[in-house]
Amino acid sequence: MTIQRFLRISQLREALGQGPTAIYQGIEDDLLPPPIKRGRSSVWPEGEIAEVQRHIIAGATDDKLRELVKQLVKARSMPNQSAA
Image (cartoon, rainbow, N blue to C red; front, side):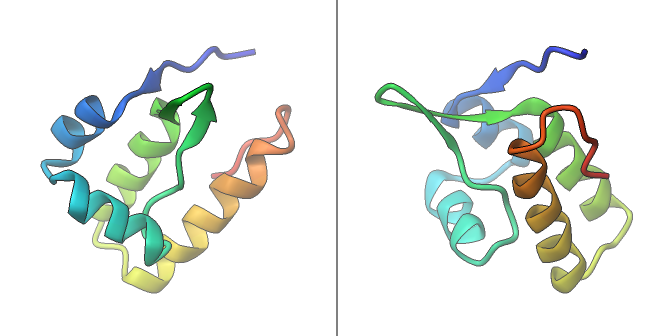
């Protein structure tokens, strides 16, 4: 079992090079995975963001990113499965 680090919005901004408005628009457009609520905080699994970054670097279309995000979110409910 691999333990993933959770990223807060400030770390996500740094990793993606985007401000919070662009990040939340990406979430609304299904181009980024939504956060996981931990109490009053919102966090993102680092591995999910790394996977999105790999696809962006590889030139994935928005449709491909939407499919990836859908798989990543689905995998959250199946902890022993890999989304990619």
